[in-house]
Length: 123
Image 1 (cartoon, rainbow, N blue to C red):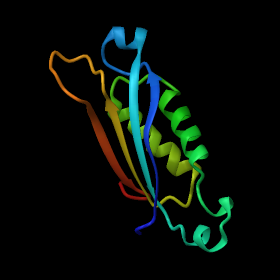
Image 2 (tube, rainbow, N blue to C red):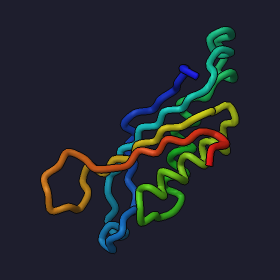
Image 3 (tube, rainbow, N blue to C red):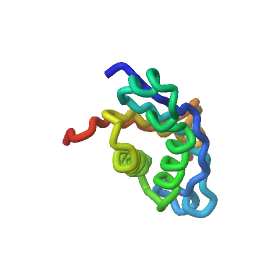
C-alpha cells in the first residue's frame, strides 16, 4: 500500500519517564504518526467518511498517550499504535515516532526518541 495519512510534530505535555521528577513536572513530547491505508474511496468520493480524519487521529493519539503514565516512551508509543488500530479498522500499518526534545541527559543533543512500525495482524 502506498497511500498514507500523517500528522507530524504533534506536541503533548506528559509525565512519562523513569525518574521521579519526570512524573512530577512532566515534559514535552513530539509525535509523528503515519498511517498506511487505502485512500481510493476518499479520492473517488471526496467524502470525509471514506477516510480517517486528522482530528480523529489527534484525538485518539492524545487520549492514548496521555491516558496513563509510562516509564518508557516505547510503551507509550505501543499504546498509541494499539489505540489507532482498535479505532480505525481501515489502517493497515502504522509508524509512530516519539521524540523527547528535552530528555534529562548530561549531553548536548537535538532529540532522542523511538520509532515503532507495526502492521495489522503481525506479531
